[in-house]
Length: 519
Image 1 (cartoon, rainbow, N blue to C red):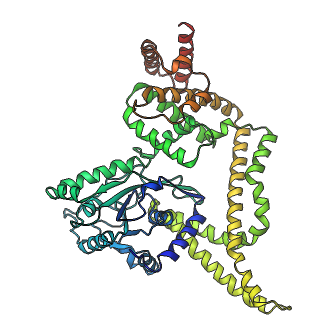
Image 2: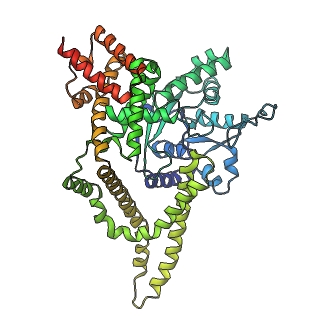
Image 3: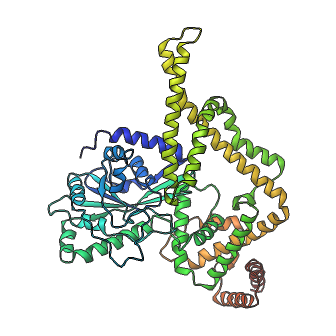
């Protein structure tokens, strides 16, 4: 199906904007996205308008998204939405996603038959449609209940239509609201909807839609990181960092985080897991109190080593600085104002990044326009003559200098983080030494927990490297049943006596050593 005429240019602009806002936008399993034929992309929705923008940027084939109709009322967004082929959808609940509790009236039913017909027409013509079944975007720590619209659309295609492929898409942001963070887009295994499945669903359309929605829900949970709340996710992220070997890619880190989050829900009631979770939470609190990260505990904080790391992190900024200076002077006011507006003028946290991006783009475009309008006449009135083509050639230096400024800002942020960590280390040397010992114990405990509770049908990730990093675990990694029972009795006794979790771990480690000596 031929996309709108503006789709290509708008996609280029979107890719440039996302490339400026995010440090990395990566994809995995792109082979799961068919290059032709009708495709329905279903994704999670954690970051407002940046979610469809990310998919438009990474998908080589044109994708038209369903968008709530109120967005089309915005005179600035309307031409963009039409340019990317968006389909307006009416919603029962808008804005805050809640129904007035004081009203006993149920939300009025809305008619989206025109929108469904438009999307079916595009799918029948072999196009790609994107839908976020959660409905409204959100900033919760887990996937929200899915609506059945995507399933109903897939199952209601007319008989004789080409087989439809549903591709689940997991959008994973390292820091959804932060400038220059990372995004990983994961394409899941496709779900095929052919005439046979549509015919089977005809007998019970509602039941079939609910079943397919449940299937999509499971697929999305396998591609995203989900926890009961942000506090739980914060502890599980610490567990992941304690476990993983150094130098992992963004893709591997997201996969490992998703596995820990999914596995925790199955073993959370086990006594050893509860003790380990509490100990890691306490460890995380202590790190936050002195403003350090887990990786800082492994660093050598001698002055020559710190200087070498500072040069590695920030040395390139000196190379880009001459070209970046004009860009820093021009773009810094726009960047600061966009960040301020994003924090203070955004009612919902899930739209902070979108606000920052749109406001920043508008302010930067205005900056370029005003600078160009000022620069060109100034060149014309110079006391010396310049070729007109040279004047025009000078204008592209604005975005080039802005690109160099991005690199300098990144390196400056890295260097500032390193210096802040060094100051924390110098101030809290005794606490850092204690946290280093505690981290080694927790790393060993996490590896033991992985071995003990890893499902038999799940291939372990980086287990050998993680075990090697924490040292020789000996037979304690796979303890005898009597040893494990004795260890649980000792742990329960310490819990009853009110021994703090970190002290409990130290005593259990000593207990394990004693068992090994007496075998």
